[in-house]
Image (tube, rainbow, N blue to C red; front, side):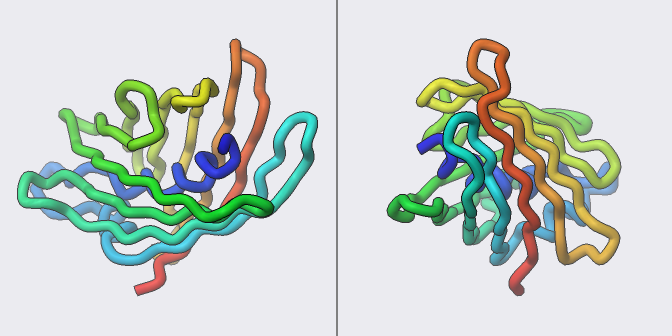
Length: 162
């Protein structure tokens, strides 16, 4: 379950906020619609394996980003995750994910989204998603910790499908 949650977090980039003019930011536009992520999870004591996800993002009438996601982790059955992310002021992001304890928090700076949250199964996650210059791909790096000790990292590339 730990690794399945790793790739699912990729799509949080969609939670980036609107620009000060009220228009949709490049980071939001990247995730509205369909995105796919793939890469490698490196888990202490069990090694590296592949992770993939496919997400469908949209904004609701209140401006919240809603994300429906299917996560595939090597050796495990696919699972679904649901995200709801909103701008909470300036460059701050807050939200919920169905397998996260408490709130997702973060901020957007330039082309990077930095997020923090705690999984229901224990580890704390810190994540950086950086939109690339082509506007169609983003690099994702996640670090999972238990009692302050790094237990896993995930590095993936997310691409816009449509």
